Amino acid sequence: MNSLSPITLHAPFSTRYGRVSVKASIAVEQPTKLALIKIGTRGSPLALAQAYETRDKLIASHSELAEEGAIQIVIIKTTGDKILSQPLADIGGKGLFTKEIDEALLNGEIDIAVHSMKDVPTYLPDKTILPCNLPREDVRDAFISLSAASLADLPAGSVIGTASLRRKSQILHRYPSLNVQDNFRGNVQTRLKKLNEGVVKATLLALAGLKRLNMTENVTSTLSIEEMLPAVAQGAIGIACRSDDDKMAEYIASLNHEETRLAVVCERAFLLTLDGSCRTPIAGYASRNEDGNCLFRGLVASPDGTRVLETSRVGPYAVEDMIEMGKDAGKELLSRAGPNFFSS
Image (cartoon, rainbow, N blue to C red; front, side, top):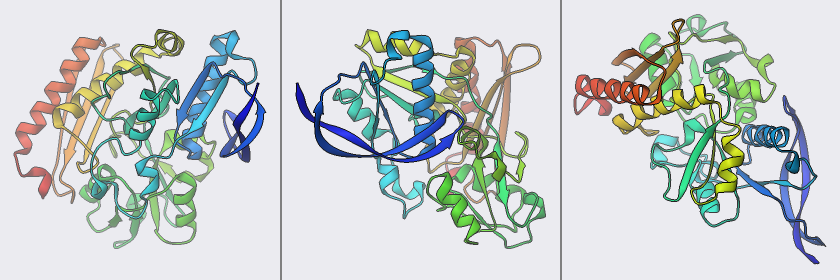
């Protein structure tokens, strides 16, 4: 049987998972091949690298998926991809990078959705589950500059570009003489191009993304956790499916990295308690300490960086304990911050 099916025009680039192609679809008549799994993703090079990592892990774990065409990657443009002229905080709302992908999942246009976990709202859409996190990549932030070795080396007044209020507030707290612009939007390649063109003197990017794109040669220095606490779920990939799709749930559950999943659950419990969004500078990181317990560190900041409140918790590396740690840390910071803290 023949039908109108998409054919892919490739603009290839390399990641550590091999060559990745950015797709543009046009309708042509060709034999229909039914994919066993349709993976939904954003179209940025990093999102595609994460989708291809998911594909490769599925193929490695399930031989029936190794046949050509068994897994199809479907690119979906999200609100966050479409609106690049405004800071994320000004666009407002949650799910800026996930809403359209979730809709495609619920409509049956895709079978699983691959997300950067730091983009996923604390409430999942009805009839979806997220039972899988892949092994977490390095959670730290990378400092990138053509003229300075670190934030401390930048002259007063230097312009730093970021799209993150979390990064902006922590930078300004330590270096109030710097000029931090918070509308430095675009994918990794776009931001590095702007840096090279002199639009800004420096930028910060998640080290995880640079590693997944094989672009760590651009890193000037890496900020420690103490210098820059990461975003909740930074470096973690999440895979969602419909709650009534047992087959897909079985496929993706086989890829789950439980230590990562528990850390993400802890951090997201903290975020949920604070009701955090892109408008709120919040950071949180759960890790296993040398005793095998969970060490959680949380932070909230005023947008201008004048006030930063931090807390930490230590407890068993087990799901109920870690959820409680995240919630308790969030309640403490809410109480200490007071009602007008985030408007300063």
